[in-house]
Length: 293
Image (cartoon, helix red, strand yellow):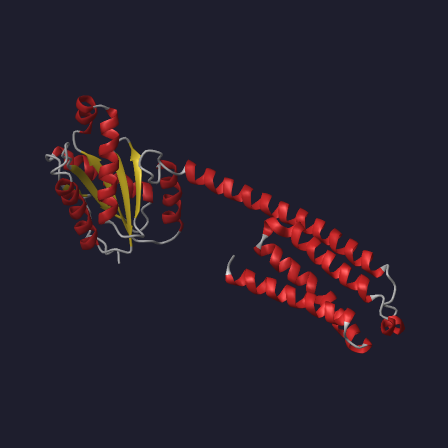
């Protein structure tokens, strides 16, 4: 039970104590004021405690109703309350019934609220699963499409890196697909370790990965690409299956769509493979490289 829940229960208990004093001890005028205060504030406190202890909604409502009803039943026997018309025993069952109904309504509200939350969680989970690569846990190609739409929605400067594992087919052919999957996960962990928390990385397909760097200069984008390339080589050098990667880097340009930038990065990746792999190639720029800062 958290601190706020304890405080809410203590306030509720103090209201019940005030109710007891009003019915059983207080003089008539003070009794009426106390009863009105409790009748006004108790439903609010019950709602608050219900929000904190949703599974206890009915229990809390009925418990409070029984407590208030029982106290008022004994209080109706006080003759001093007769001028206030509070000496009628029917007040007790009325209070009990009102709070029982209140508890039932709260239960329905809590159940509907829980159902809505559960539905929202399921929808969120389905969305996450549909945008996540099951093997690596990275964003998948569908998530990339959504990210491209965001990039095209406004004037943003960014860099796209296309990365491909060198000779990965030989890994699957020689060691099997299970080992190939392990290598992919190993490479992903090394890549994430070299990227900033806000950088976007996705599995584009097979052994190809895509990285989007936003708010970064062209010099720093090249440095990140080099770090990824070197990091994979160094990180897997002592593994059972050493891995190298080839990378293509493209910088966004004014008026260019994200898909066009991706095509440039893919062309640069092909150039890196052609040049011997395990290296970075930057897409050709017809003008001076734009700053991505």
